[in-house]
Image 1: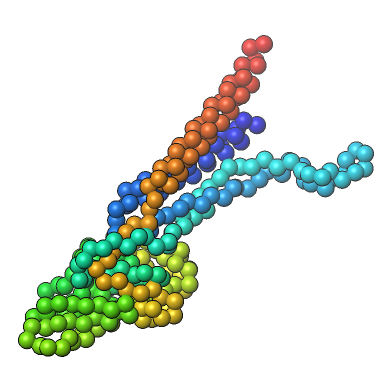
Image 2 (image 1 turned 90 degrees about the vertical axis):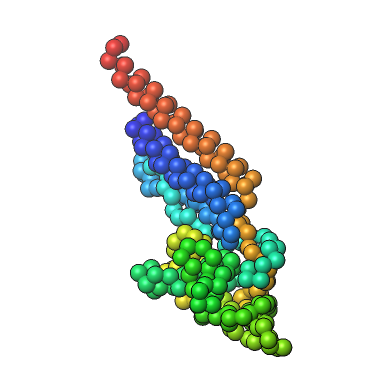
Length: 269
C-alpha cells in the first residue's frame, strides 16, 4: 500500500536531514584547528515479510525467494574521522602539533566526565601562574602540568615532548616538563564536547599514556598546528548527493499521495 511508502519516505527525509546537519557542521569547521570531521552512517529498518522464501509452490517446488517490503531507514551512528589534518607552520614556540596518533590531556570542569578531556589542539598559552594552558575556551590546564619559569626567554620542545626553557642569566637550558600523549583503542567512541575537546566513554576503553614516539604515539612538532581534516570539495559533493536523495524521497511521497488520491477517486466511477 502507498501508506507504507509514505512512512518509508518520511524516514528517509529525517535521516537525510540529519546528514545535512552533520555536513554543514563539517563545512563550518573547515578552518578550525585540529577539528575532526564526522560521517553519518545509515541502516535499513525492519521488513514486512509478505511471503517467506522456501515455501512450497502449487507445483510442489520450493520458491527461491520471498517477498519483503522494507519500512525505511534511520541513522545508525555518526562516525568520527580521525585522519590527521595537514600541519601548518606557525613559527610560534608554544604551538605544537602531533604527527601521528595521540591526544593531549587537559583539565576541565569536574562535572564533565571525570574532570579531564582530550584534544589534538596544541595551541598553548602561559597563564598568570606560568602554567601551560589551551589557548581556547577557559584556558584548560595541561595534564600533567608544565610550568614555564619567570624570566624565560626561549622555550624549546623536542619531538619526544621534552620541554626546556632558557632563563635570563643562566647559560644552560632548564628542563621544565614532558608532554604526554594518550591513545584509545576505539577513538570513534569518544564523546564530542565542542572546542575540539573529547571525553572518554565506556566505548573507547582506557587511555594508553605514553611519551611521544613510543607505543605507537606520534611525535611532537614545535611551531606547527594541525589543521582541520575537512575536505570542502568532498563535503560539497556529499551535500549535493544528499540534496538529490532528499528530492527523490520527496518525489516518493508525491507518488504515494497520487496513488492514494487515485484510490480515493474510485468512488466517483
